[in-house]
Image (cartoon, rainbow, N blue to C red):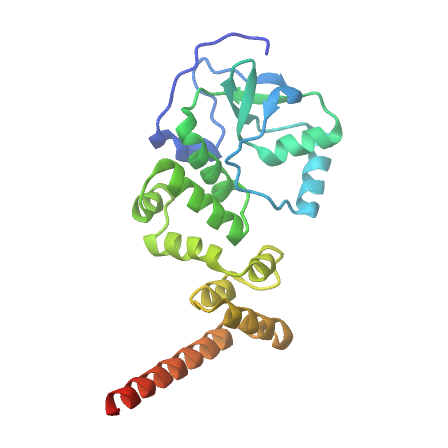
Length: 239
């Protein structure tokens, strides 16, 4: 890094502004060696669209990196805060440096920063978002309601999204690759019996069921189970 500067700590109220690059007073854009930048361990994104990445690579080849990434100093190196896709694209091209803003964020804010940056900029898959939300809840030790306020969502949205992680692995893979929708996944996540969830998931794929049709199947099964349980209780009471 070619210049020295004093980094100012920023608070959670500033985090929502990170999706728009605004150069602050006395803030510099540095050309930092990509080898000195470590991935954010709290980065929730694990799936990167190949076509989207190819488009970004071609854009950077032609125009360069138009928007700096954001990093946090960590000794002689840096931890990535925002700009995972840009950093990956630059590395794939073989560029040695990347423009970056260096901001001295507190470590405890990194999970939230990574979450917000991805939610607002890169469209996480539902499962990646669920992982990010759960991770943020755990690391920041906040409630579903508190997190919902931070990201501009409802408490129900946070709870339902995190609930997707209770799905069987096969169903989670289908959500990630887009074989079934978020609506299908949300309906399946209401089923406590994982074997049944897998069976209905298989029907969704084989019969190309809509979300509404899936919900009807689950509702009918639930009602039947409740009826069976009620009959069993009545039989026991008669004995």
